[in-house]
Length: 86
Image (cartoon, rainbow, N blue to C red; front, side, top):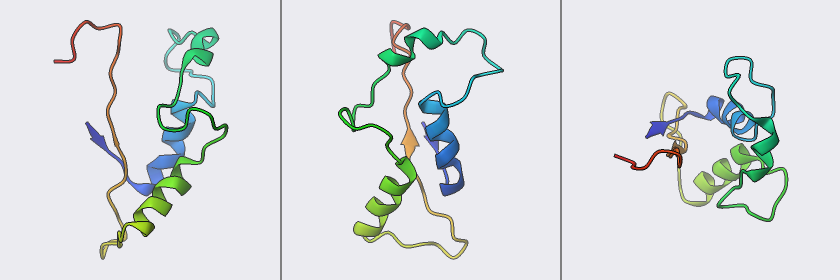
Protein backbone atom coordinates (compact mmCIF):
# COMPACT_ATOMS: atom_id res chain seq x y z
CA UNK A 1 0.00 0.00 0.00
CA UNK A 2 1.34 3.42 -0.95
CA UNK A 3 0.10 6.94 -0.15
CA UNK A 4 0.60 9.80 -2.57
CA UNK A 5 0.46 13.59 -2.44
CA UNK A 6 -1.17 15.95 -4.91
CA UNK A 7 2.09 16.66 -6.75
CA UNK A 8 2.49 12.94 -7.51
CA UNK A 9 -0.87 12.43 -9.23
CA UNK A 10 -0.04 13.56 -12.78
CA UNK A 11 3.10 11.43 -12.91
CA UNK A 12 1.19 8.43 -11.59
CA UNK A 13 -1.47 8.86 -14.26
CA UNK A 14 1.17 9.03 -17.00
CA UNK A 15 2.83 5.92 -15.56
CA UNK A 16 -0.42 3.95 -15.24
CA UNK A 17 -1.55 4.79 -18.76
CA UNK A 18 1.93 4.18 -20.22
CA UNK A 19 1.98 7.76 -21.52
CA UNK A 20 5.72 7.69 -22.11
CA UNK A 21 8.16 5.05 -23.24
CA UNK A 22 9.92 3.37 -20.33
CA UNK A 23 13.69 3.69 -20.45
CA UNK A 24 14.23 1.89 -17.15
CA UNK A 25 12.19 -1.27 -17.74
CA UNK A 26 12.93 -2.95 -21.08
CA UNK A 27 10.61 -5.85 -20.19
CA UNK A 28 7.43 -3.83 -20.80
CA UNK A 29 5.59 -5.26 -23.80
CA UNK A 30 3.81 -2.22 -25.22
CA UNK A 31 1.78 -4.38 -27.61
CA UNK A 32 -0.11 -5.64 -24.53
CA UNK A 33 -0.94 -2.14 -23.21
CA UNK A 34 -4.34 -2.26 -24.92
CA UNK A 35 -5.23 -5.13 -22.57
CA UNK A 36 -5.03 -2.83 -19.53
CA UNK A 37 -8.32 -1.54 -18.17
CA UNK A 38 -9.57 0.89 -15.56
CA UNK A 39 -11.99 -0.68 -13.11
CA UNK A 40 -13.61 2.65 -12.18
CA UNK A 41 -13.83 4.37 -15.57
CA UNK A 42 -14.27 1.50 -18.00
CA UNK A 43 -16.12 3.36 -20.76
CA UNK A 44 -14.38 6.73 -20.62
CA UNK A 45 -11.34 7.94 -22.50
CA UNK A 46 -8.75 10.41 -21.20
CA UNK A 47 -9.57 10.50 -17.49
CA UNK A 48 -7.93 13.28 -15.46
CA UNK A 49 -7.33 11.49 -12.17
CA UNK A 50 -6.14 14.60 -10.34
CA UNK A 51 -9.34 16.54 -11.11
CA UNK A 52 -11.56 13.63 -10.10
CA UNK A 53 -9.72 13.14 -6.80
CA UNK A 54 -9.69 16.86 -5.93
CA UNK A 55 -13.40 17.13 -6.75
CA UNK A 56 -14.17 14.10 -4.56
CA UNK A 57 -12.21 15.58 -1.64
CA UNK A 58 -14.02 18.93 -2.00
CA UNK A 59 -17.47 17.32 -2.15
CA UNK A 60 -16.83 15.19 0.90
CA UNK A 61 -15.69 17.95 3.21
CA UNK A 62 -11.96 17.46 2.90
CA UNK A 63 -9.92 20.42 4.01
CA UNK A 64 -6.27 21.25 3.72
CA UNK A 65 -3.90 20.80 6.60
CA UNK A 66 -1.73 23.70 7.68
CA UNK A 67 1.14 22.48 5.55
CA UNK A 68 -1.16 22.32 2.47
CA UNK A 69 -0.70 18.58 2.13
CA UNK A 70 -3.68 16.27 1.98
CA UNK A 71 -3.74 12.54 1.82
CA UNK A 72 -4.22 11.45 -1.77
CA UNK A 73 -5.08 8.10 -3.27
CA UNK A 74 -3.78 4.87 -1.95
CA UNK A 75 -2.59 2.51 -4.65
CA UNK A 76 -2.86 -1.25 -4.37
CA UNK A 77 -0.96 -3.19 -6.98
CA UNK A 78 -1.34 -6.88 -7.62
CA UNK A 79 0.70 -8.83 -10.11
CA UNK A 80 -1.72 -11.47 -11.38
CA UNK A 81 1.15 -13.57 -12.69
CA UNK A 82 1.95 -14.39 -9.06
CA UNK A 83 -0.16 -17.18 -7.52
CA UNK A 84 -0.75 -15.51 -4.13
CA UNK A 85 -1.07 -12.00 -2.78
CA UNK A 86 0.56 -12.74 0.59
